[in-house]
Length: 150
Image (cartoon, rainbow, N blue to C red):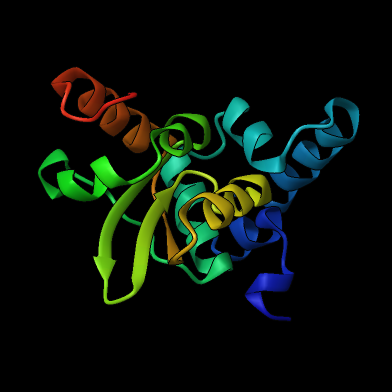
């Protein structure tokens, strides 16, 4: 079975990050609470966000990155629609030829991907960054006051 066909819980188990008993407990809670398995495992303190992100990057076959403020391309940020950054927790990182590289906390968010396609209208690739990392960068950008609308 390919990684993309496996569910997050199965991959966490495969990589030895949780036990089968922990997965069973989380799946039982998932049926009751209708939450994502990753959220439940975090709530139970069985994994940390970085472990989930690492496994998601393997599952989706996309890079997992940690972005520092000095890596931000201010010119690119000024050109990119600020509502996308704020509403979908993402950061445009760099332009490589005709393709924009965008860091997202949730690269499976279909609504965000559609909004990027319709608003930006250029080719783009997605990398995964933690929600905390992106939130801190958005806060940093808004505090510097260099980007309008943030």
